[in-house]
Image 1 (cartoon, rainbow, N blue to C red):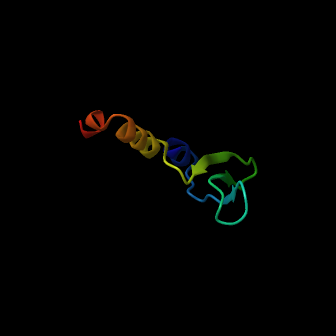
Image 2: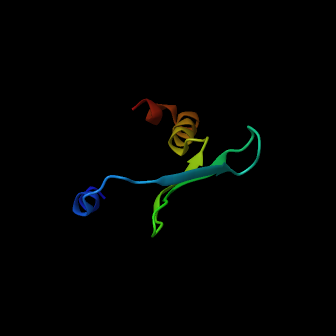
Image 3: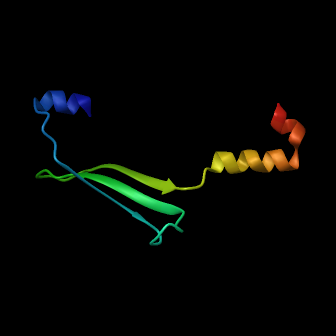
Length: 73
């Protein structure tokens, strides 16, 4: 992306971003967000899946409960 900006000789970029959760309120665990350029040829710059849960942490908790010796290593 930096090469494209330097090649065009411009650094003006207008973007639009939005996000949403699966459910309203604070009970939702999943969501999405996107950033889109607002130029003549719009492009998706970034998309992200969001989660309030950490799968790495959940896996570590599972190992800690099933095999405490392995967890301490």
